[in-house]
Image: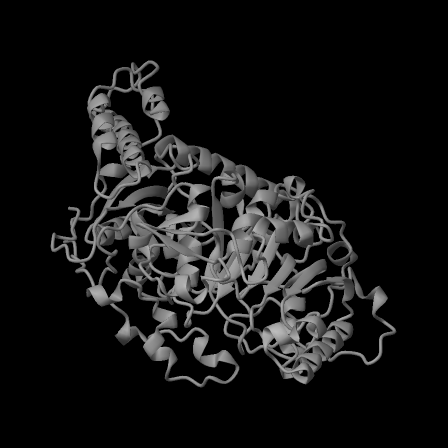
Length: 615
């Protein structure tokens, strides 16, 4: 309520016009709207409860004396008068629909090299023109860190993993919740003990290692417990027989996407991650001439670490327990060791079933190696969207400032000028433009907080920035209470996802003409800066908004930032999608053509037949 109260202070003598008074009351009302909504959402129930009711009674949003909010303009009044199209709910069978990883479509593709588990999106004429419903009884996730350990059963009512992984302590069903004890196939003593063993070799405790990639992550317990060390992991696993493992990860508040190492390059830039990890992930690392290890090498920073735990490591002592032939395991490990040598990785550790390699900081150590690897011919190692993976090694950049730069702890990396900027590697970007961008986003985020004062309260754990730029939005929001999935649209003229990773943040390439690689209802807050101007004439605005609705939780929020004519169209469309919307002026006043649209998705579940229109 702080910002609502602040809006009532000051001298109102200079505001004479009715339009100005309307604008002031609009923003004051919007403050109260988000305050009450925040209390409603934080209480953890679906459609309002006693806590929200009591706060509503105590909050007098109709009485504001001496209003002093001067930056709202007339944005809330703008309307083009067009009729609102009402979007109907989809059938209940689509509750967990993942358009580009649809199980029925997947089965029509070859199984070789996991092709059928890769992205296969529906053509435009097969896209669902409706709203994906939440399951009956859907509940808002528990706040972090409780969400790490508990997920409401109704949100993902699938018990198969509690049976399949019962001995391995992945997940347990207890009453009306799933409990995640922090166990795993390779960490029977718990994730904390396992991570501490890794930290005896890998510098996780001082902020040097910040970003991690977890391949074949299961329910992402490794990533969940890494947050204790302020390490953020990008976890991925396919949508396969381990039903809803990525859905569980995101319900727990852990970054994850549906993905697989198959034939297509991973949707991440080169030199992105400080560490990559596989814990019995079942990826055939030595197969296809070491192609999968070469892809890991591409996305690892110079000096980064690769952790492999489980088969075939230390197979001589474990082949009987694994119930696999000695000869097969011996050959598997031999191939892995050969590829690691070809990549010029240094083996740092092998104890028990854990092996750790480190990528060399530059090529100086590898010039005399024999045999020499096949080097990739592509001049842009970040050009990966739907590009075939190759059995070749990505060269180190020639610029010493990029390859040999000393690693900084995360506390310094977040706001330091990334080497991709300072070296001039990205045309059109300079140190000055980076610093100005950082200042601008701090200003924008502070303005957002004045309108929606629960943004950094812990109410929103899973946040997405659909057009992340240099990561300024995520950097300004940085908090242990939340994380941001920074999306780099593949149609952007300037690719800055590598800059985002250098700052110690995470992100992914994506084309918003297609569905995102996630389950429905997996994000609490979505930020869309210039997305619809970027995609003008590229694909249908309705399709993008329906996808946003699919991945947004009930009672989740979206902040749109764009030109006023674009936002008028957006507001009209979401008015038929069970969203509430308020438009406000730029924080610099009514003159800039850029406006901000604040929206909230209403709570509704499968089986409800009420109208979708909020008009």
